[in-house]
Length: 389
Image (cartoon, rainbow, N blue to C red; front, side, top):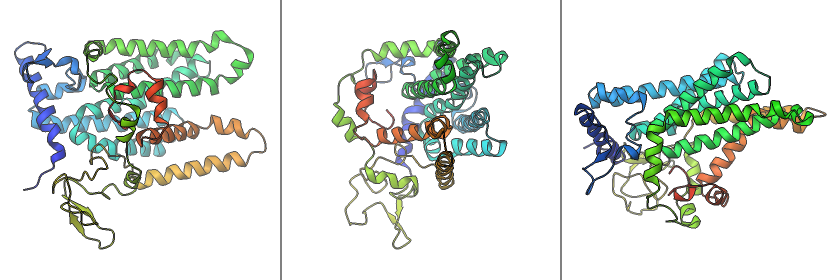
């Protein structure tokens, strides 16, 4: 019988959450407490049920079986649209921005998460909008943008951050705030360099003030979810439960890098098989090429290299080729200059995203660089994996 064991979280966990929320709303109650788990547990504070997320209204109005499809469609469309918007803010042409949107909404991480974890895709779709808001607010604060659009971008960014908070995945919220801070700091230093030399402190202080207002307003909009989660998080068991060495050991193994090019190299749980490059055949999961029996069963693609959902890092061949081409053009453009090479390199948008990609990969593969997060940032030592949560 066809089956995919990785879908169990969607059915056993998320579907049950949505059903309980529907029943509570129908009874005119706020689902603060669930009696269905052991002797009872906080429900709303858990966050991952996405009770207050605006698009969750689909789950309350439609039959659940249909609501999941429409919810996923809405989030993937939103991901593409917001990525397109960010690309346009960066100055890309319509065709290039359209391709950015397609890649963001159709990458492997987004698709495998959509199949199992609705709250994850509901959270990650807002990153492009928030980066666009950061870009515009930094420009306006430094006097390089259109001042009349500062407040609209502030409100738009706050709404986006509020929706992200209500989506119900606090780890994605944390990661997004980190990326926003890094991007804002980079743009603030680059665009305001002349003001730094002039010591125009009054102008330089404006971008941080606008961005702080965005974050405060956004978290206030999501406070109905953020505050209960913060309270219940104070009594969780993860604080100091695992050492840096243990968490690094749960990172991606080096061989997982192969799935950036071949997502099914280690198998696909919906096919119950993996692709044999030597014979061209699909081989059942019962044994691997070395003849070893699969310890996780004949239907599992988890060969000790993270399962298909948790290990979903495939972007596509074309995006990787285009990223390589962009790096090549950035390098050639920098070397072609007789003067100002360092300035050109630092101000190029590709520099930031190259560094972001490098550190992201270094963290998820559990390299020693993960110690920067583990020891340098609050709450990170509660995460049980370098690559997601």
